[in-house]
Length: 451
Image 1 (cartoon, one colour):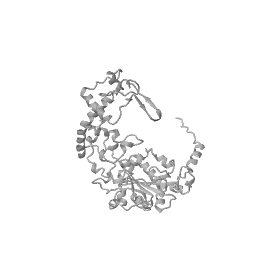
Image 2 (image 1 turned 120 degrees about the horizontal axis):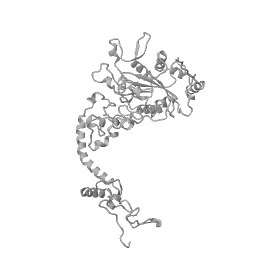
Image 3 (image 1 turned 180 degrees about the vertical axis):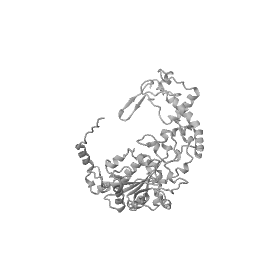
Image 4 (image 1 turned 30 degrees about the vertical axis):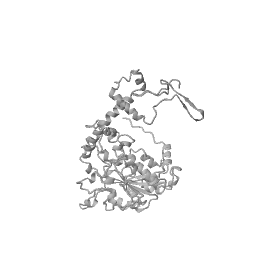
């Protein structure tokens, strides 16, 4: 067996990377490396505003790490845009994440210690993923629920202790995902952890160093662009280059969670006409098989899951209310028609039974060329559809009466039209371009002889 030959790394590549990011000393924490930098000389013209760098400290409680995984797929803006400082006016973000950070051990924990001690040269935000457990319950048996780092004993430090120490000095605290915003699945009825949301833990009087309450971006997992867009807006405000983002009464970005799933759903037209799916895989409205979309505030049907692609209802799944504070308990049992859906869908079927045939009737006439009606036949290989019967023609006659009420029929119906300053438009004879078309039950007004 021959030895595998590998080419040595080009010194030009190393020099180019060092020119972009600077020499990296992996034996120190990234926060300490930032202390030795002059962020004002980086990306001149791009990093506008007084704040050039912001540290983002990611903490996790009772979590499946699904929010972390989802955020890597963000595109508008992307995580790379934020980390590299590619967005004008938005400070470059230095991310301290227990999964993605290069350093480990004491060097990694030093990042958090510097923030808790107030020894950073830049503001910082806290991003919390997962619900917050009641560590007092675990301490009764000498254990803990979630921890990161250890003291000299050594004794694991509960992650919530870092939140307690760092939250007062944070420019903002952002809860990502339903577990962090409302408690989510770890806080469901019967859980042994006593889990709660970030805002419940910090209390109603909490305000960040910038005067912001906890910012909530719910979802299980959230629409990732909702999160990065919110971070982007908060950083612009922090830099004095944007207004304070508008939040609703639950601390959610109001412009992202104002409307319901149903109002933006691609299947909403079926609901209006009273047409419902009865099994998964059908294209109609999903309310009858357990969709909670009409009462859930989320924009996933409009924005998609990642890069405007996917999304529960877009791909055939029902909405189970994962962005709402009542999830999961108030939406159980899943995949069963809600009591309200039975009433609303019955009303929709009733109105739809009248509206749907009327729309199909209008569609039938609008799918016919005016030429076909004028000549009495279809001079084409296509369009060989049954001609509307007498009842439909009478119905459509009155429909067009209403359609053109207080309006002129398309085309020229006058022998001539004169305007000020002597400008004159000659009349058009029926059959010529510009002449009024003949509608069912209607015919253009023709000029009298000699006029």
